[in-house]
Image (cartoon, rainbow, N blue to C red; front, side, top):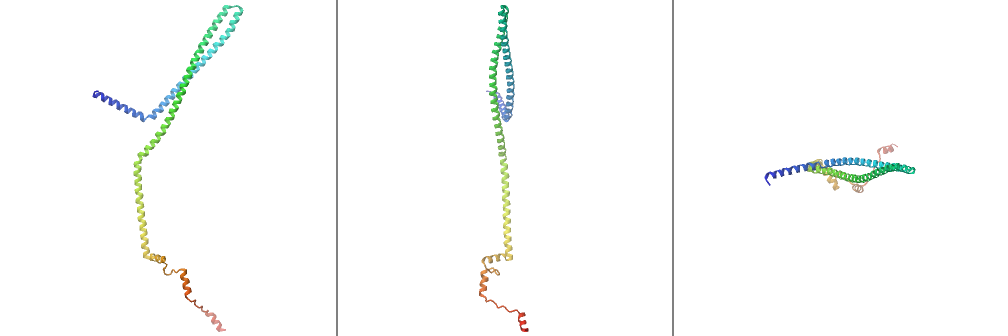
Length: 245
């Protein structure tokens, strides 16, 4: 193979791949259009079947009319024979034969049309089933396509989302660190303030039970039991009144 043939094959292959890519990218749109084309073809097939049914019914009516006319002429032929008019009877008999031939021909055509009608109806029914099954498959494919597009969008955003979440986590960590530093500052400030005012020492003494001025109930009872009760001095006003008397 010459270099030109190889290049030609390469270009044809590239064109085919490009065309195939376009077809694949628009596969659902193409399927929808093919379904519409199939529905349109089914509509034409139904119209043709309706015309076929109409033609078959016309032939049936014609065959029926020919048979009825033949029966009517049979009565006329018998009447002609009864009168002895054989020539007229023969003429009527020929008319009966022609009508019966036409009726038989129409009946045969009716049978053929009915068979064609049955075949066409079967084909239409089968095609309807195939179109409906394909339509359901297309709906499933569309749903799957939508889901996969959503998944692809999530995956495509996963990198940026991960970066964003990582940045947010770092910011949250820094905020927590700042809050911890502030809490420690507040705690140290409170300790320094307690030391300055003596509150820290009072808390320690109170915890040890030796804080001055904070005697318990047991201490008060012990003090009362160990100290004699003082005598109560009578009021001076009452003594002076007695002296006057």
